[in-house]
Image (cartoon, rainbow, N blue to C red; front, side):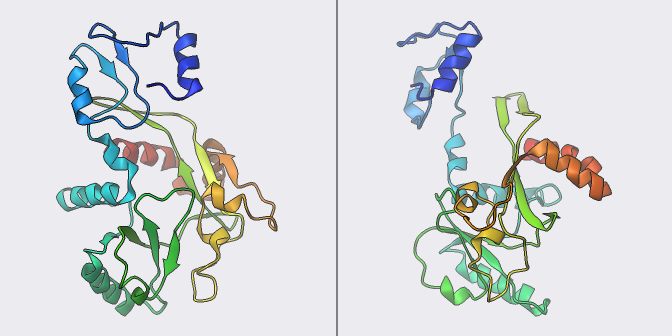
Length: 251
């Protein structure tokens, strides 16, 4: 079930022999792609497999947010690292109530970011300030409160780090010490009626910003470089890496 050459190359470099038909005595089972629950029945207790049962839940935004919302209800002091989120269509009434609450306490229009359940590369993502645009939606959507981003040199960005959960009992998490910082290709300005469609300043997806033929900026950097930049301009940056590791262990 190995689909990617990098996996085979890693095994070869580690001196691990590969077999096409593993039995119950094969110590490592590697499985790329979907694996059904019944397939786990063929894995013995002495074997190690690269999949954790049920982890496919994080492949979809809506099931991930559903799980995180449940954890926020149980552990509100810990699960505060993601925006207020709603799942449409069944939470539309809750979304309306929240919108009225935030709007009553803000002089500016409240903005929400809308994402399809299984989209990628920024496809289908949009910003809205009027909920009537979502009132008749029937497909599963994730709607999150758009929060003012932290900027580096006036540009919105996000981090992408790589995490390995090696065991569940004991719960063991590793985070790779390097990652990526993905930048927008246009300077950020607060969302308003005129710029809601300006994806190059609101969406950090590399697949989106690489299409910007006008503004030639560096949209990909090493995470460590960006963290160092933040440290230079903000004292809070000194604890940023520790906070990232803490969130990684909670997710």
